[in-house]
Image (tube, rainbow, N blue to C red; front, side):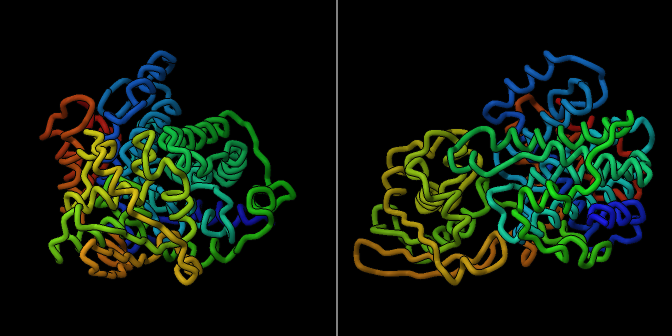
Length: 457
């Protein structure tokens, strides 16, 4: 029996009562954070063109675009909303190895709720999101070597899990939809290295794939049965047979990986966050001016180096994505102003000649001990040397927003307001904050279908 059958049996039998309070709290914060990220992302590069393209496709009015408000076929709405939520790279990250979650699964949860054509309670919404994010994480974490496959490769399975709860799929339909999801898994890390807008687009493409798998199953299409372990299944094909089944089945239904998700304090790749925090603290504590810096050395793991330091464009960015995935540029911004904000991306401060010059003084190296750690985001050791000969060393294991120091719903609500300020269209503040309040009180919400409409300009 293929592992996918155990997964489907779990999905079909899991109930809201399986969620502990930590998981419920995490779901609420990720909902607020991901939908805020999508509101902000409506102004991100490439998004206006994507909205125009999708609007031009037309079709059945099944679900709403966030901010823009146009109702489109569900899979088109999922595509655009998912891409928006990743555009400024301020959406959540699962540090243990699951990667990005809310940008795709939370935005698609509200698309699915509108598509369902029936009441979806707040409790059912939370259950679906918990199941979907947990499955996407577990499937990726089961790879012993990830070979460049990003979270979005596994998200279509999570969307199927979520949809099965919203739409009332039986075992046969859920299995078919899982197979159909597998036929569309394809997202990879190369865009992060090359600074491509495909990074945000992949978030939407995986959401679209999940929605299409659900809709194809509804009209009777079948997919492969041995999805995970068949001769051409996910792990033999994408993982070269190197995978850990216990990562999928261990604690299934008892622990949900969304509880281990980080909410981002900075609008950049999570691999840059510890260097940002460390250098910000150093310059403040020791009164170091940018002109005082002779060299900064960041010790990290191979994943951080490959994504955020290996390419020449990470020192002199060609695009906003290059900047978001650049440890040298983010360290230079942090050293100059003590923090990194959305405005640095919007105003393209990363192109500033002084920032580029300072970034040239930042070296990144792979630390063998840190690289052996199993998690995606590892502690970093940062060394800062001044022109006067002083040497400061700081090791940071995690930053604010990580599971060890989580942001609560109140802090996420503050971040949400910052996101509203840069939306592509002026947002009605009272309506948007009503969404936040409903997200905080989801246990008592009888029908979530109209919630996303509160985030339309």
